[in-house]
Length: 442
Image (cartoon, rainbow, N blue to C red; front, top):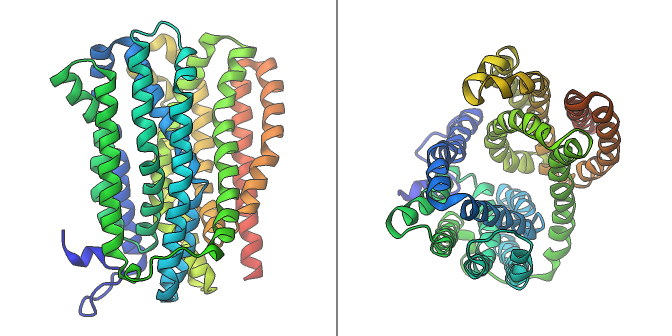
C-alpha cells in the first residue's frame, strides 16, 4: 500500500483530479466495499442455514443484529467527528486536529465500554427470552464474546470518520471490503473446518472486528500526520461533539423505527402471513440504499468543508449529485416498477409474487424519492444542521403511525404501502425545502 494513498493531499507534482471525478472514483470504491459482501451473502447464507440449523442460524442473526444496535452507542460521534475534522483539515488548523480526534475517540471508547458491559450483563436475561435453544450456555458465551468486542466496534466508527474526513476512501475500502466479506466468510470457514459451534463463530467475528479496529487506527495515524505529538484530551470539544451526536442519535433511533414499525402494524391489522408479502419487496428496494450511501459518504466531508467556508461551489456539487443519483436510479426503479411481477415470480415464485408485485410497484416510486433525499440530508449534516432533520423525523413519526393505522386498517397491504409512500414524499419534500432555505440565506 503506497504512502501516497495515505496522505491527505496529493504530492505537488501530481495534478489533482477534477473534484467530481474524485467523488465518482471514491463512490465506486464505496459501492464495491458495500456491495461485494452482499453478493457473498447470497451464497453463504443458505450454506450457513443448512449447516447450523434453524435455531443456531437464528441466534447468529440475532448476534449480528444486537451488535449493530449496540453500535448506536457511538451516539453519532463518528459522523460528528467527520464533520468537525473536515473543517479543521480544510482550514489547515493542525494544532486542533489532534485534541479533537483524541477527545472524540476517548469519549467513544468510554461509551463502547458501557455498551459492551450492558451486553455482557444482559446476556443471560436476553437469552432466556428465546425459546427452543439448542445450547443456552453457548448462546450466553457468544453474547459475552461480542460484548468484549463492542468497544472496538464503536471506536472503529470514529476512526472510519477520521479517514472519511481526509478523503482516504481508497484505503478505507481496502479495509471495509475484507471486513464485510469476513462477516459471512468467517462463519462459513468455522462451520466448514470446525463444525456448527456458535461460540467459535462468534469468536471469529469478534476477532475480525478487533483486527479491523487495529488496521483503522494505523491507517488514521498514517493519513493524519497532524496527530503526532498533539493527541490530548480537551473538554472543550465535548459540547459540540455531544450536541451534534445527540441530534444524530435521535434521528438514528426514530428513522429505523419508522422503517420497521409498518411490518408490526401489518401483523396486527392484517395477518402474520401478510408481513411476508410486504417485507419481501421492501427488502428488495431498500438494498438500493447502498447507491446513495456510497455517494453521500464521499459528499459529507466535502459539504462540511465547503459549507464552513461558504463556498458557492458546494451548491453546484449538490445539484450535480442530485442529477447523477436521479439518472442512475430512475432506470433501476422503472424496471422494478414495470416488471415487478415477473421479477418476483422468478425470485420467490408466482404465488407470493401475486401479492407482492403491486407493493413493489409502490415501493419503486418511494425509494427513488428517498434515495434522492439522501443528498439534502447529507448537506444539512455537513453544514452542521443536525437539529432540523432530527426534529423533522420526530414530527413525521406520529403522522406516519396515524396514516399507517388508518390506511392499513381499511386497505390492508396496499394501504400500508401507500402510507410508506406518503412518508417518503413528505420526508423528501421537507429536506429539499430545508436546503432551499439554506441556499437562499447563503
